[in-house]
Image 1: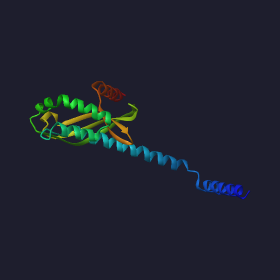
Image 2: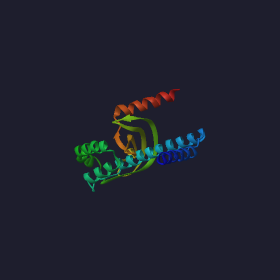
Image 3: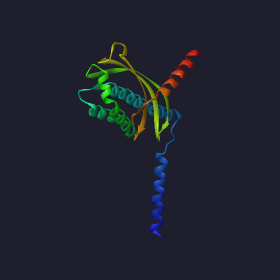
Image 4: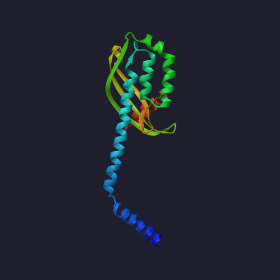
Amino acid sequence: MKKQWLVILIAAVFILILAVSCQPISRNTQRATATAYAVSYMVDAMASAESSALVLCNIDFEAGKETYIENICAATTTLGCKLFTSQISETWEDLDRSYSSKKLGCVAGTSRFLEEGNQFGMRTQYWQVSLQGTEGWGANSGSREYWLQVADENSSWKLNRVLTGDEVAFYKTIEAMAGEE
């Protein structure tokens, strides 16, 4: 009988502790928390898009293909690493011959959020990132534009892929239509 009362007493104390520690949270506090979370993950996604564009744009041909692939894979999702490794392996020699400089350099410019979605089982965001070429780019190609998808892989935003020409055309069409209003 004593054991039964002891269990009831412990349960009552536990319920009392829960009741005291569970205070209501105001709507303003809930909104502030949600806004802080939204701003935080948007900033993280934007930083990923911008740093990924810089990794793509800054190419050291003297360091070689493997170093460039390593740099890209450090900034990409697992899927993105496989995709870029395949593409770079196929086109490295042509890329190297295309430029008279042994290094291509860029600095950050502006970025613009396009939209958010889900693809390949991950939350994704689409970004347009503009960079300024600083080294090795021709006179008419100093401004570099990257249309990217970043993905939240294991709670970390990373480059997933570069948008296709059709996707870029879609966003440009939407932008043009919005400008007509």
